[in-house]
Length: 99
Length: 484
Image 1 (cartoon, rainbow over the protein chains, first blue to last red):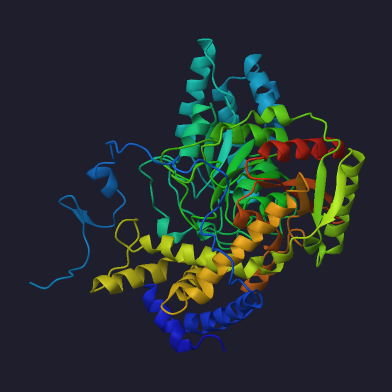
Image 2 (cartoon, rainbow over the protein chains, first blue to last red):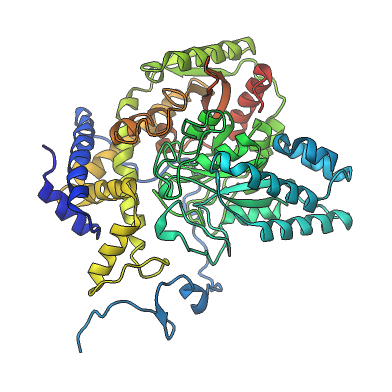
């Protein structure tokens, strides 16, 4: 077993996902199978390999640097247009701090 | 109108331009015919999720005004185009195939969308896809699967199944898709059209809803290599809004067409020819024979890290996805399930909104990034990714192009693999390597099985050598009579 049902519940909490017991059971099985397959990576000795975080090709080193210039942005109204709940120019969420 | 009624389903970019120039139809007439045709045909495949008639007609009117005034109307003037629904369109609903974004109206346009409209392109509507582009069959769309236009009981492939099906069906001349692990090339192969994944950074990702940022690409679908090249021409190039977009100048891709490919050195990676369905293997072998007849020098090569590509990919892609999809939390993007506390609201919204495949990938990605596992999984995968990229770099010292299958088998039956996520992941083996290395790659049709199912052949070249890729694909397509 690579992963227990208890760990799956813990990861679901980290990921902010509310899952049913049925989903937890299904995911435990699926993740276990996938993680077992992923273990094949351990066959490879990578102790002398530099990790590749992004696609690399020959280019000028500082090409993406530019002057910091002000640009127009979306604006409050547009930015809030898709919010499920907003008011007074803000996104509204359930109360976080008690008075 | 004759040219329209006789063949809106088979028009090419060149035919649209010639038709407009000869006044056989106006851009508005063509847009209206194309919309009517697409709406009537769509129930057969479910390729489009929604249409954008106002935007299409407005863009067509602009093209007509320019043509009347004798001004240049752009290289894609009047061309009906479908856009995958993970690419944002200002004022036009963009759902990413997800219930979570069912009502999302983006406040801005993706750079690729702006550029194709600047080139005169007409966006007919948004195409179906696996939820947040996660899937290989289009069965993970919250709005139903896309049926393969060639065989309606079979999948279109995914995740850009709607764009592939629309082009195959003739309800768009060309289309935009996105590719993170094969999501352009695999559906192109399954539906019998051309699908291109350009070099990473060749096309701006600004406005492409993020799945796995280090792997995401926007890429074209077309019925001919030439049309795919023309679409890429219009959308490629540096964009300040995407810091990973490349500065490399964009060459004239059309110059690669109708060229001689004699002497082109082609490598066949032996690791890609194990475990192929026999008919797929036979068709690729015939394709290779055709390339030899065209004067290409073919040799066997080895890309030894290939067998590690699937686990490597499913760590990196899910880790990045778990981070990118954290934003769908019930605060900003239309959907919310109310709850007492903020955390419970997040959890309820995400639990109700995401489909099974998204949840699986968010969970896997969160797990591999969680405390104590980073080195064992994410860092390990990044190192294996370096080995896969190095394999290609070494191979391209000896060959100009690599030819390989796209998928181990042709389009499978709807529902056939839905209960086995690992098997579905393993079928991505031949396409994810190109994304991991960031090199240009494409699927070009290479024939059909006895049952009439299309099979695509993959061509991969060096970073930014889309020209070499198009040259080979175009010569192959013409020699084999494979243009759709």
